[in-house]
Length: 254
Image (tube, rainbow, N blue to C red; front, side):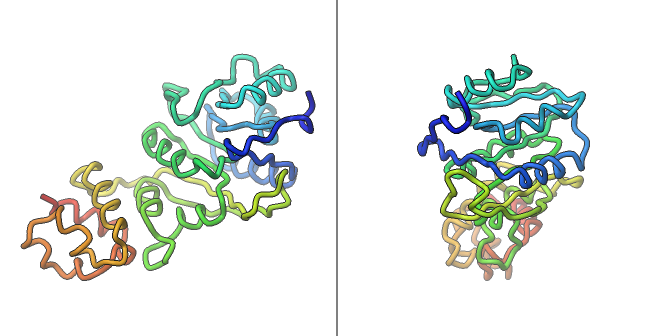
């Protein structure tokens, strides 16, 4: 079976990356930081995988849900023997005991879920590089005051520094998606946020943005005592608050 004969499955959001220049840019961005163990999410037809196999002295694992693609990868790249995890990434256990790096051309239909899984594993992530739909990448990197700033922006930036690396045109894929793409890099923050608890932080952020048009006072009323809600910060809307603002507010939650 050749790459041209592979079936594209819309249900899995498959678009094959075929632009070698973009592949090289992704690999260059990956190698700008040291890593030992690497997980590629969704190898597809192996556009990035073939270059990962050339990197010396790393422990590489690949997770791929599609059986046809697994068979293709095994036949095309025999050195992938025992490196492929044939499973749904969203259901898999951590692939390594030690710190590891994540890379992938992420299926757009589950890219937010992939991010939340990376957040769950954040204490074990050295860094991550991923291709996202451009709008999602912009949302992840957005700063307060921007209309695209939201739950993803705050929760990801609370634990990672987001680097918006470069954009990718539709023609770099087969078939071309209807949207542009962008590659970002996530690097763990060196300083921990001063939170009362991560549980409170996640709850506050999600509740605040759930009614983003309302002032914070109305959006998160149930999470605070009436006295606390008198503070001036509650006159603002969620998109006006910095990540540190959200962190500080967790100490006042009931």
